[in-house]
Amino acid sequence: MDRSGIIPLYYQLMDEIIKMIEKGNLQAHDQLPSERELCNTYNISRSTVRQAIQELENEGYIYRVHGKGTFISPEIFKQSLLKIYSFTEEMKKLGKTPSSKVLSFDIISCDEKLSRKMKLNQEDKVYVFTRLRLADLKPMMLETSFVPCDRFPNLTKEELESTPMYDIFMKKYNANFTKAEEIFQAVLTRELEADLLEYQTGLPSMMIERVTYENDFIIEYTKGVARGDKFRYQVVLNK
Image (cartoon, rainbow, N blue to C red; front, side, top):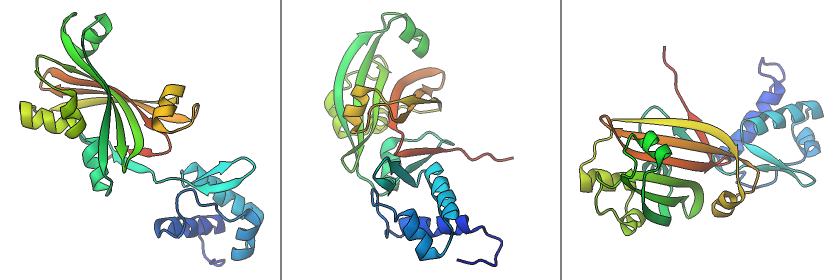
């Protein structure tokens, strides 16, 4: 620790712990040394250690379990929101193996609410399918998508299980994605979602609604829930 510099001691301790996480010396769910151990190791006060731990928790690097201690958080995937993105491609960039399990697949008629959302006529047919999105076989997101049958005739459940949806749209149907709108909302994870995501009921998740356009036509409406401990969304603002 540099006690003569301008960088606060708590920040220096944070930096040390973050470096250990990034180098793999501390793995996901490893227990962090106790406050007393950190005080003795770095010869700093308990208040300094507590401030560092609080900041690390605020930034998602660690989590606490009452009565047991403080632990290293699982890896958080950072997602840029500046362009249309695919779960599959983003996981590949991170060195993960993406996959999808199609939990349900049906064809339904638009009701009044869905017809307004997708700018379709009532009774127009849409595919509705729910997918569990995984990375290295670990559940990450639960998504339900609505797709117009007229634009994507003969779409099958088997295709969606073996091939990324956007790849199917582009290669089989020559789809051209021109714009996507997304709405993010923090929610508490419900019991069914928690079971499928191998998460805990009542913990924070991110609900994401996406509407994807091909020129003026909506070709996808998806509503999904992402585990709150796995994703961080990033927007870069330029002047």
